[in-house]
Length: 267
Image (tube, rainbow, N blue to C red; front, side, top):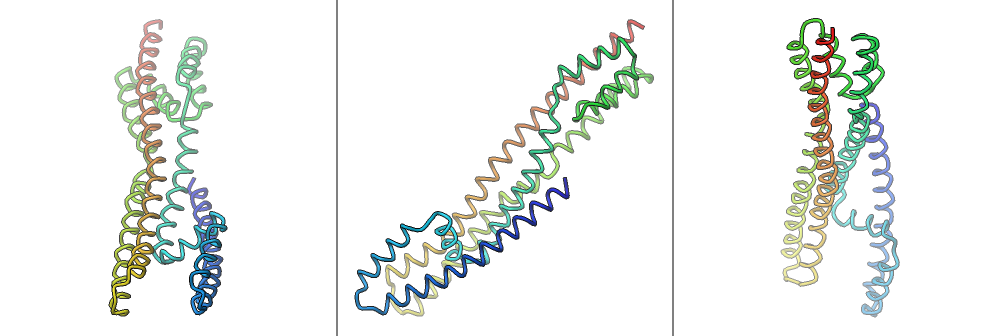
């Protein structure tokens, strides 16, 4: 899983770096075109042409342009939060899906194996079944000779270990959820300072200058909020999935204790 996480992170960073380079080249050509049209006397016609060009751009092109306008430094950190958050999310999705077990079928197989082949046969069934529930069953069956109380303690202790493994790396996703908007707000504050500095240099409060500076400054906040919303959906899904698996673990553990108790009575 660690290798998979590192692979996704490297691919994301390389893709991000390639897009930034292309976006910077596109931004330079746009700036040259705009500077040439501003020097022409027909300013109204040039503005209309520029708006038509913007409307004709694809979503990917507009996204790259806004990325450059928001500032490559802060937008890069926001996007990296998204890349690493998604990489961890993919790893968690795979792990939790592999951890999901049909507990009713497993309990039926364990009970059947106990009645036909004893504890060793039931342990073999658990070894051949993936997921935390099967691992907990194996730990309980492995201490069957020490009594039901020891089996129960073993199941409870190992269940806590498996619950910790299920919740692994969720704190990193929570960090990126909080870090994305914070970086966005920081970029906005710095952008606002730059906008007011531009007003100070110009010596005049121009509505166009103020609106343009504030608009560019707010792009980083928009990016940070989008990152937080995307990762928050994954985080809530993981919490719900983990709660479901833990509930199955607890119910199945109680059922295993009952099965072993009945098995001891038959002996």
